[in-house]
Length: 125
Image 1: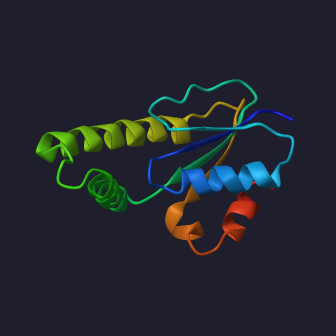
Image 2: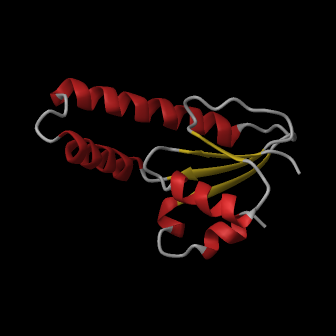
């Protein structure tokens, strides 16, 4: 079986999808990465997850505050966080638009699978 790569925008449910895919495909190594650092390998099956950019920004901010409290880095920390998100969306656009026949791609939207995991199972069949 070709390698499987779960490549998702941060805060798009990529960890959840990665865990489900790894359980659904026992004996298969499923790599988890983000589009900003993803490097394509021939014969990889790529599963991508995306989410509305506004929701990603809000979730990043909420998680940043919950982890750091008042010491969340202020405006500069928020700018750095949003810069990382921007790099991931730019990487995702390249990943999703790449027309290489060497890669099978399935794109899952967070809004579609949040309350319906069957969307994930259908995407990996």
